[in-house]
Image 1 (cartoon, one colour):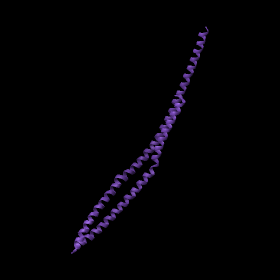
Image 2 (cartoon, helix red, strand yellow):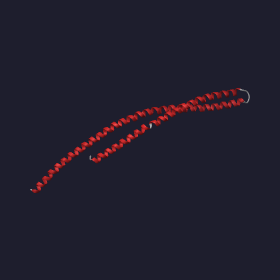
Image 3 (cartoon, helix red, strand yellow):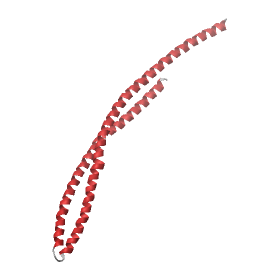
Image 4 (cartoon, one colour):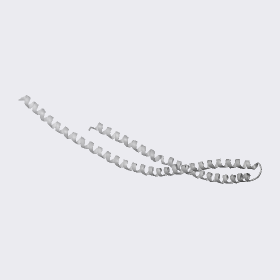
Length: 176
């Protein structure tokens, strides 16, 4: 292995190491974005729960008005039954909102928060493992290239000695 190959191997090793480090840094830099998203989603969940509770209280009061109108005599009975139907439709909307609120927490926020923690641990471990492995690999490459250069030098010395003997022999045979 000559110096050109050694330099090319070191460049490639450095480029791959740099790429890996850039990816890990991107992962680490994206934590605040995901944590902010998680915090905002938690706040949305809290506000939706409050909205659902307010809607339930409103619909209970509205149903009392509808029941009062239904129980009176005269034309208000028809108004009361129409108000009851409207209240039932709104309770359906309230149930869907409650379902969405629960799904938001159970299927998005909680798993995301768990994944963020796992992601942090994994990224940090990857970074540590990569640094250790990268250092070991670079040391190994340098050692192998040093060994190769020593062997090349030794071979060159042998070739030089052999060529010198052949050269002397050639002149000896030619002159005698």
